[in-house]
Length: 202
Image 1 (cartoon, one colour):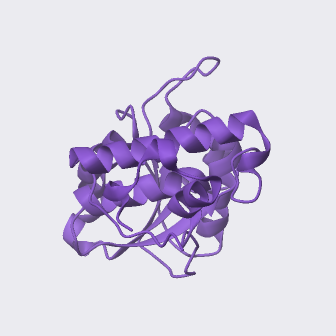
Image 2: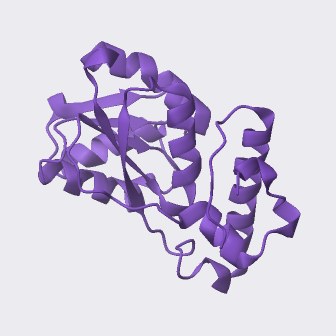
């Protein structure tokens, strides 16, 4: 079923799980750069996976994207991620930052120029994408919608505490977050801001 044919208010738990989580898994391929989307908890949950990918040699560069300065932080997401990555042993010359974006679409759009300056876009074959598992579908569709069509993606989802495929339905926080994310995804597809995609619901 196409995402555009889904109704947020009529989605069962099973269908919400399928929409956000089905088919989201790391294919193990190497890439040119690790793309990390910022969030309020990105240094806790997303950064360790990105650093592991880097140290495993899956990609030689890491791009941290995010311009929001969260309460309690002194700097934007990308800067906070860079500082912690340096502490964890990532070389400074291997870190690229984009610190202007305020949301997912801007993570992608603002990173286009940053990636072009670092690599020239026509030289990029594959990006390794790191974000929370529940957010990966929307980020992946945003990348496919706005990035050059020749770029491939390896999806490297990260589990947080409350919004994993195997536990989101056990808490009111997880339920609300998943429902909200499904709503955003369907809304943006119907607006034409994201390309549509077939999701297997049976």
